[in-house]
Image (cartoon, rainbow, N blue to C red; front, side, top):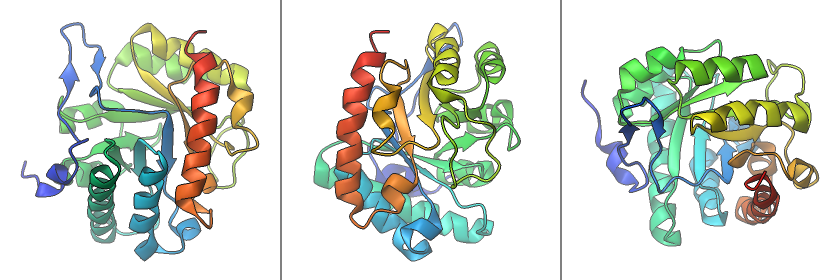
Length: 252
């Protein structure tokens, strides 16, 4: 399958694989502490999304997921390319690596050589792993301990997006809130086989520290950065809160 040169834009997009036991091998440069999912409307339109991505990485975001359910494939492909370039520029300017995922569009992830994040109703993680092989990361949304247990048993995903933690206006099809205890139960399954996990849903500067002690690898935000007047400042503040919050969870 032909792949374009976008993958080379960012030194953070490095090949990885799986060890002989089938456990995920996530690139050592990957920092899930603060994970940003784009929202085109909150960013101010499709033309501004790459700018917000750049500012977010400059502020401390380590992983970006490009999500837009409304764009056609050709428009989304252009957006993903521009965001990959923005991540690459931010890596060079900040001196920190960052990684880029695309949401759902497995065909575009394969064409551009990018990581993909899928939901329970999107392309299956098994299909994503088959298409992308062992060189790229696969993320999977889980909304219950049962879904987390199944993901661990299947071992196709590298990182689980666990949520929603709390009610969120940015995802209309989200399930009922898990709360910190539900996220803890899901993350515990992920840890048993070395899967990374991030909490998502309703996380903002007012709620982030309520996840202290929850054993996830990162906090995932949307509106806290996408809807901010100053995305870089907002990312820096969320990074500070994420670091403080996660320090307690890693020893749990």
